Each structure stands twice: as C-alpha cells, then as structure tokens.
Length: 61
Image 1 (cartoon, rainbow, N blue to C red):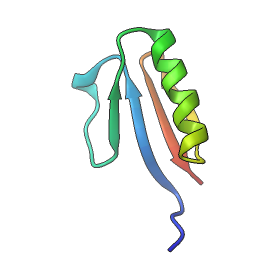
Image 2 (cartoon, rainbow, N blue to C red):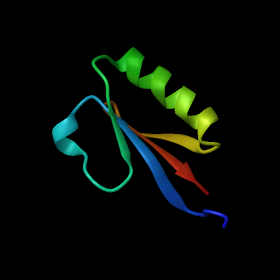
Image 3 (cartoon, rainbow, N blue to C red):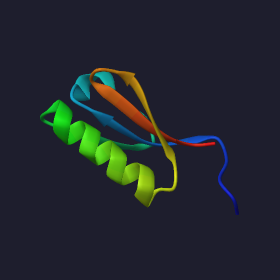
Image 4 (cartoon, rainbow, N blue to C red):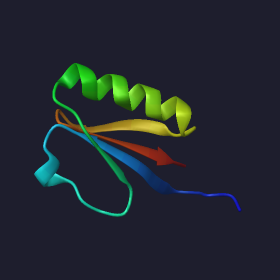
C-alpha cells in the first residue's frame, strides 16, 4: 500500500498548539526543532514545511 498526501509528523516548540494522530515531536530550541525536522524529512522520505517559527510538519505528497 502506498501512502499519499498525509501529514507524517509535527515538530514544535509549543506542545499545547499541536494535536492529532500523526507523531508529535516536542523540542526545546529552534535549532533542535530544525535539526529534528531535517532528520525526519530524510528518514520518512517526506518534505518538511515550516508553518510558523515554532512549527514544522513533515508531509508525504
């Protein structure tokens, strides 16, 4: 089964702003959040999108 058009993960500095069924990664600094997003992008074969200064999502197109 091929997964298409899905949010695979969220990476955030503000855990109270994110919920849902995708994995949520909570980070302490902006630098940590950017590193986690870059790593997950490669691991999950997805694309990282910055939605705000405190939130990235990894999506599969």
